[in-house]
Length: 264
Image (tube, rainbow, N blue to C red; front, side, top):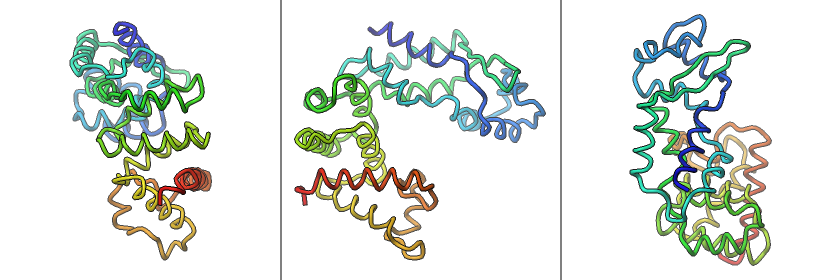
């Protein structure tokens, strides 16, 4: 299983990628190059600080839900020891693993920088455990075929402490009773938890009500403290979001409120 996980991660990192517009503009700004693909040499990247390299390639090397779900097939509930992640990182750095990167009809070989590899491995949440209690709820509540995705969501940073795990258990239990589970709703809840960090279910209900109400307020009279929103870069109720994102947030918040209506 461990070797299968190791190979899955290597396959994800080395698959061909298209260069994103954001990476093109960042590379042009950092390295002053006419052709961004010229910046993929080790010599060019050596001119940059680690944080600049990480920022430049973040959009190209961030694991998607499907990537984390693919790793979940080989993951024990208790997670993987941190030594596995560090050993894999050092091995890939020594081997100078690379991936093809395309820009239009041109292609270049990128030896993936260590800081990019380290970030990707960290975002897979390999060490995060899924408690037996949460796993039992997933098996009981989530439709067949969705267990791996639900487990990799339960490994997210939002669910690391005791209070958040209790909230996750409570929400899954209620969704099971009401037959209302959806992966979209669980993803939304994970994002909401990471931003607002409610202490318990009743606190969560109050914050969800505030979110829904804020979208019905005039822009000049927001419910939330705008300075706090500016500080929270990943705030789920951003100052500017499209209609589709607004509908996604309001719809899922209202669905959760319906689930939790007996918790007030």
